[in-house]
Image 1 (cartoon, one colour):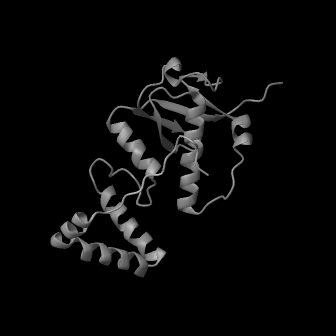
Image 2 (tube, rainbow, N blue to C red):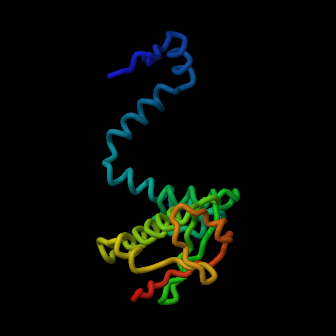
Image 3 (tube, rainbow, N blue to C red):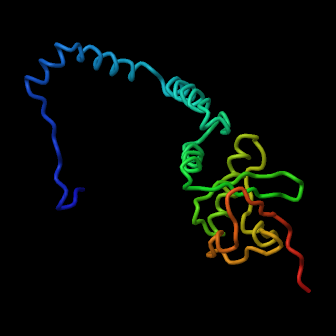
Length: 177
């Protein structure tokens, strides 16, 4: 259902447009493209898309990304190159470092969501655990930067002094007695 201020736009090709297309041989190309679209099953189109994406990831700007890259990861990498985002290295207790990309003015909550997304993508690619209770994780683990807990989710990372390529530690909380 359309809203009152929206008016539909119809494009009606004129005879001149059709003549120009025929002269340029465009009608054959358009017909071929329409036939190709109908002839290719979804799985083949997906394969073609993934091949194109794999070629795109070979670009020096995007070479750090995995083969099964998402659009979100490509956009993050581009934002990094333009200085609109920063990488925060999250160090886990087992020694693994997770490179997390967040916008420059990100809050602690944004960092937590980015960590969740990073782990979800990692689990999908490795076929690991299906479900992680993030509520439990954030109740039992904390993020620390230079010994200071990042407790307030609304505080900006830059207010804690966190800059590009800084290390944040992901550590189990100590029980209070």
